[in-house]
Length: 217
Image (cartoon, rainbow, N blue to C red; front, top):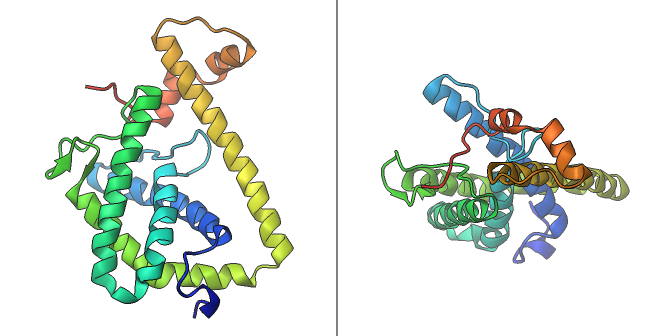
């Protein structure tokens, strides 16, 4: 079982970061499989230019774990409902923030029933709830046991390296998307960074990577 000293407290940052990494990768892969099964199209659902990683899934997994872990003894139905509200709410906020930052819509559920502004919908909220209940009751305790077996120095070193790689990928992805917005506004490249973004990540490359990008309504 999970150590009693943590029994009634939210998980430590160390475990939450592992949750963030695992949730980001698994979530992106789940979306790829879902879209493939529904449309027959293999489409990247990554938030980043490199690697299969969804920031929304990663941050959502960490948020759900931190908020719901102290309530895991309340039963799976409580976790399912609370996880659905948390996950669906977070998905809505993430969509709004992404649109405000990049003036692009990264996903739109307007074609699905019971949607909320196209940013989230009841079906995916229920999936968030189901995933939250399974993760809190089964997945996270297993992860905690595995991370506690890692050598302290080795585990910390691995997290540092992964953090640096992820931060570099995030900064590069954000710069490329912001430069795409500038190009659409007719702004010429100002400086070596902007010119590099134009050369390495022109619009066709970004639209190929982020195939769900849409203009706001």
